[in-house]
Image (cartoon, rainbow, N blue to C red; front, side):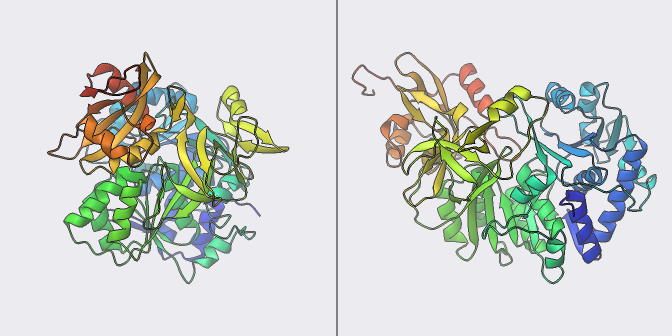
Amino acid sequence: MAFNIADLVEHAVDVVPERIAAICGERRVTYAQLEERTNRLAHYLAAQGVGRGSHVGVYSRNSIEAVETMVAAYKLRAVAVNVNYRYVANELKYIFEDADLTALVHERCYADKVAQARTEKLKHVIVVDDDSGLDYSGEEYESALTQGSPERDFEPRSADDTYILYTGGTTGNPKGVVWRQEDVWRVLGGGIDFYSGARIEDEWQQANSGKQFSLIRFPIPPLIHGATQWGTFQSLFSGGTVVLVPQFDAHEVWRTIEQHKAQVILLTGDAMARPMIEALKEHSYDTSSVVAIASTAALFSPSVKEQYLDTLPNVVITDSIGSSETGFSGLGIVQKGLTQSGGPRVKIDADNLVIDENNQPVRPGVVGRLARGGHIPLGYYNDEAKTKALFTEVDGKRYVVPGDFARVEEDGTVTLLGRGNMCVNTGGEKVFPEEVEGALKSHPDVFDALVIGIPDDRLGQRVAAIVQPREGTTPSLSELDTHARNAIAGYKVPRSLWLVDEIKRSPSGKPDYRWAIEYAKTHDAAEHAVITAGGTRR
């Protein structure tokens, strides 16, 4: 028995071959069609020398072809590598080299950048046609499929086969997090039930459970994001239908939900949640099919949660925490009127701890580092030093500690505060950006915000905010200060303010702090507060 991504998809194919597996735009494929197409692509790749342990880049917006490429790679015991479609040529070259890509599947619209970034090791390129009309070098996708056999005649696979997810690189260079497939499936793919903690021991259980009942899932973030990959895989493992859109547009999201009767919606924090809830208020879409909305991997601020609870009172709304290095770490059901500061407040499972600098569990009210045990990754690809720093031992048990800080609450739940490397140290006090961002975004004139630390002669660092105001408004530093102090301590409020037309985020909605720091360095602030010797402001 092998808990392997390709095997689990094939089980669903065998159980519900005629059911719709995936929808994107006007295209849809059944499980039987998905099986034939992925077999053909896998055989074509195998003829080019792709096999066990080979790395295949997937450079695409959300599409059926992107899903097919990932499944085809796993059928061969190769590894699909997510490539951020917003990267420029130099960033692409870094990924191509760091990930040791030997094959690449990309949309035709990225052909120019691929030509600039292509490495000597990258031998085989397959191009998914679109309406861009760009010249390209490689085999056209549909042509490649015609050259491959439709048969499922691959070697036996293993739970030890590799899965790699590259981080977004918003606070440094992207890193490939390496997992055993069974371990990442246990954490993210339904191998352990999120709610009950029950373990699946029969590899056919997910497929068979979908024979009589299945869900229509709509993961909105890009497939370069782990949450969408695993939302898609979970759907395929259980015989469900996954709905995809190539790019995020709030109104298009609701139209897609209305058209396909999507039931479970996955999004990434405020960057998607806020435009969506405002679009829903602008236009009355049919949301009657929606039973659950889940936010992962980015701040879902209290003010936005309240809007969802007011607008969709019968929908279960959940907030979860995790990272590329830990996978899923905890889940919380969003409740109306719940007082909260910081990021998601969740109940963590038994494999998670919050530890201090001495690797001991912290008591309630104390901030520490989030540590995950149990099913954890093997480390970072091609980086022994960072892999060594990623792990620690607590009472003889191995844990992964990626640098996320959290606070243990009195009721035993945990509030995620943010990455330690983005923490602002101001006058000896630690300030986590996500907590301040949540306070700022509850102001009626603020549409989006990022918080960073900038140098300060007196404080070492001062808290600074880059704010995207709502159209037609110009919030002042004084107004934001007064408002924020209702939710956070005075030392946490921003002392410098930049106003921008648009906050830059990753395609998945995660904050791009490197962009924010560079913007603050190269642009004049709208306002600076002056800190006097007595600590007063003027």
